[in-house]
Length: 147
Image (cartoon, rainbow, N blue to C red; front, side, top):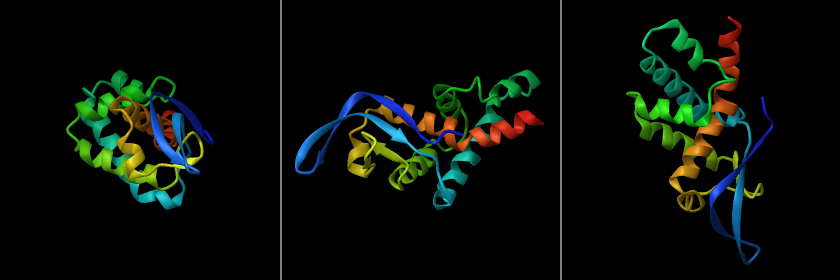
């Protein structure tokens, strides 16, 4: 599993740092710890519910959905949006998780509600999808593929 991942933003985010206005052009996401278990559990459960409802029951489709080499951030978010899960529960869990020290603007500034509200929808969805693929699902999918 990755130690951290850098993601370039498509839209800069202004924030104050040391009395000056800065413009974040990238964020860094870091893996969760046991401090984040509640949010991670919600996200993992929602993903597997979405994968189950998304699947048409064919073994080939299920195998593709659980292959971490093929699964992209965009795939995960599309699956979540097209399933019958409550996407607002997913977004809420992601926002809570990001504020607990796993999302950093310019690699240094911890995410806050005001900062996340400045993210474009596309950037937020990309960051959320990357977080799910790289940290929440990576270990579970790896174990599933070994079986």
